Image (cartoon, rainbow, N blue to C red):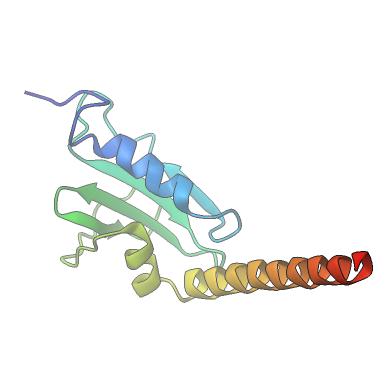
Length: 128
């Protein structure tokens, strides 16, 4: 019996959520594979990701976790035996540019928060 979209074990939906969790600018391209995914069989999902360093990954998501299955979009011919609990863990291990982009994004957010905090403190001092 094939699982349909929306049921427990719907890895197509889970894969889309994982892609949505990747912040803008962290990777160059993030999409579900149109060629490898079957909407009537959702016990497995394939994701295509291109790093900001132009490295492509085809990633499979199953009950075992995430793993690289190819280094071109829609290519599942190079099955890795290494599974990861999350897409972020896989990318942290496989892509230096992902780590660098994530760190840069985090640094920008921290600077923005620091700037806002300083502005709020300056505004409070001007009110007193």
